[in-house]
Image (cartoon, rainbow, N blue to C red; front, side, top):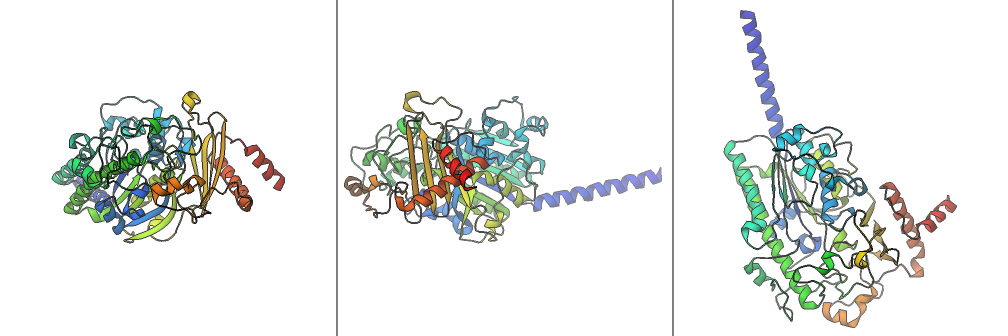
Length: 521
């Protein structure tokens, strides 16, 4: 009997020690705060050259961490670009391996605990951010808009709050998302929780309708409806503004191009400048909420052990190239802001990166010492963040396509769609849209022509509005015989990337390119 008591006591002691060790290991793991905005071009931030939009808290992240200057979405197979983009973030999968995931139904569970308990390794969401980090002992939290992400993964977060917040009022605006994070942190503080956390903070702005607070509207010369003439306080037109896109691009009748509140089909100076002001008002408001969260983490003593990501789910045009939406592959829409702050990241540093958003999950796993899911196509870019590498890949591939939607209706066909490839300073964009009626090719040297200016930007009426006089070489170079060899090189590169990522479509001239490759080999 005495021996049994000794054995039981020893066993209890070892259990207690082991439990303490597990708790210690968990508390030593870094926290992660992932902030994602909706429809935000990198050009709206000081870290990427903007001198008008005031974002002191995002600036604070850039000053305390690293700004990645070459970060992109891989693209979209539907007009709601955010859906495949956010699914890639959640799963680390490449674009064509996300088709169908966001719309695959699963049982409605009463609680996240029951949803996690029912997960099986053959379920794709088993390898999503919340499931991976739940299994690693993290408390996972999400606040975001609803129904535009990967729902089966979203319901796995320990805490999940969803609301579409694009109003000026606090209860239906960006403050609602900020409040939810603060409530979670205050609960953690009061309960003295030691488990590491992963917070997914998804703002609904600056997606339209861009309803801003009145004081910020006044600051940026904006209102819900555009004035007849530009407000002097409104931001200037973008350098690559056009009153109309030069050719049909495959989303001509899409919602973003024709039904944005306060804009609709208008592309005049007053309308675009007003919408830029509304955008900046919304961005500054969400920046205020980010500041509240950062201050709370600092007050709790959690800030120094927290990796913080700031990004957008895609870029946006708002007047650039005569476009309003994100259903294109110009830099303003294909590229995203990406700033990361945390342990081991040099303050105020910058790097190219050549990163896709699908690289976020494997990078988070690296930060937390968690094995990356075997389902990931993305790569960890922690080596870039700690200064050991400048990039993680040489070539970037982009897509816009309406794979799962009706096309050809209302002159809005986009299949096969738009494709892009970028390597170094060179970028190729190809359009095979409107049911095969539109075939266009664009070739840009981004070092010489960073805003992808076209011959239309040299029109005197456009120059008068933008105040920018392009150089003669700042045009689409695809039809210039001088660059014929470079064009062929980029065409081949695009085809190889399409093959690498299992793109189900060939563009109109790819048989010709394939024949050239076969002859050379």
